[in-house]
Image (cartoon, rainbow, N blue to C red; front, side):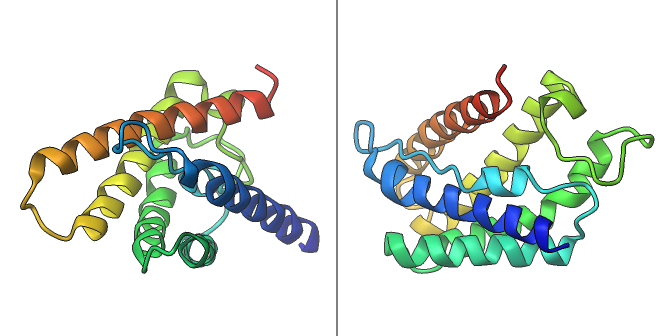
Length: 167
């Protein structure tokens, strides 16, 4: 039990450091900023319930907001993503899957995992930009920022996962 807690806590700290120290300083053409915080929710095992998943995501979002000076945007988007993640994962895996399965390329298959990561990253980005802009006044800028950040974030997330598993 303590081992799993420490493992998740170290993953949280690693993703927090990557987001705050590296990704927050990348702004391609003033639009695209990668957000790798969704990787923490993507890596939550199948046996983690909705409430613990949301609590972990809330903690990561709160720490990210504190260090990034974004008032509640990451907290709201990550908590909502964690709300959506467990039922989505259960719908995408087979009934015979192990209950402590961690979603990755090996356990879900490459295309299923890419689809799962894309859906969760899209949910996180839509909710983040809805909270960040909080209006539909300049829809073109919102869509450009959303699309470019989504593509850059997916590139980072899928690259990090493939590096972590040596594929």
